Length: 551
Image (cartoon, rainbow, N blue to C red):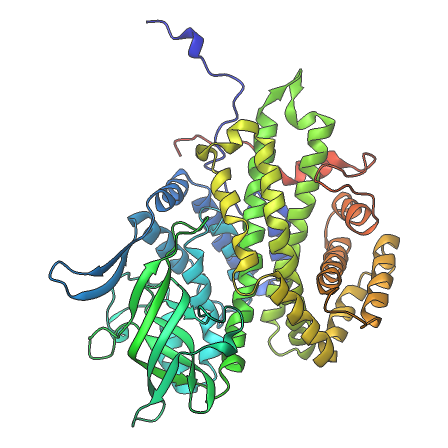
């Protein structure tokens, strides 16, 4: 039978079979800018391999399958024994295993380790975001564990291992380990000092039994967790292993898995402790101070994850417009669509440039200037970049029209994921208040931040004006808590503007300064001044022609 009426034309091919890393100039240029010259070739080769894997049809199928088949909780075995296990689709394990083997939990001991790991995280999580949660927490646990040299010596080699094993086994029987974190409780949420979980000391120095609950505990199949509990000396940080050294299971009762908006491949759980064995990390009463470095690193990963989502959304939108014809010509050449795509591309490049600068600050471990800079800039950037992710992703989805609203396009999954990082590791208000705390208590951090943005002074009059306005805002502390979001937003925009003026091509920097700093911008994407070189911006954001869909 003839099927002529079903001939499909004027559809964009899938964006598949391409190098996610090489197709992103903002990322490749940032890596070259911040990587130590003696390891640059090695890093570029490593990221190229990861980029080709992330853009492959195989990785995209893994992402689809891992989210189509959500984790399943098994509290008991067939005989009624409590086991508290979570079953994941094999695709989830493949994604996670590839991330571990690519070194995404190993940044602390390699040259330019944080920069290369951050770039790899941006590349690989464009294939799928949910498995990035245990990757992030495992990476971030290292600085907290280093407060106890004995624990660090025991656990750090496991956390930075390139080997992934999914089974629950004694830590010494596994080639590598993953970590999770449990801080928030039902009654307190972000106010972790309101935690009620109790820690009772045992006879052996540094060991305790925990009794209580955690309202959010992500990746419950991890090998260990950093948790907060009330010890006799106050709120304290503890290392809680899932399996004890003798091979028995620690008491770790998974009550249920969260039914989340997105992040469907990753298991987020509620857990109960009842005589659960744990080891103290740091001093009693210093729990927040001990775990705060882990929180800071995971906050950077929230910004990295949002930058990855934004880049993938922009790549999909530009790719679609490059292959779709409408109203007599290629969609990408239509002035209004070009304005929308350019606006999205500028936002994405600003995010990517910023997160790579923050990662480079972690590599400069011996610099007090860099340490103070990142103390303030991470909170500022986490607030703003994660806030920009949902509206950008929604606009990119709209560029595909009805096709973008259909699950097969991949955009709905990106959109559901887009609000996550703004909520995780401290919501917008928490970040804004943290910035205020730093401004009031750590003047060296503000000085380092102002030094950084001052490196671009005189290069663009709109940036200079924004810096002057920011200084006026910071000089007025009256009612600053109610203005906190406004202040942090301005700090983020000035930081991004400074970085783009210094490092981005002039069309990108000009568009950012004209719109975000100069006020020539509307209330939605696609309202850039028409006199800008929008074509150059869109061309820079184009991931190029897709390869064979069967690749």
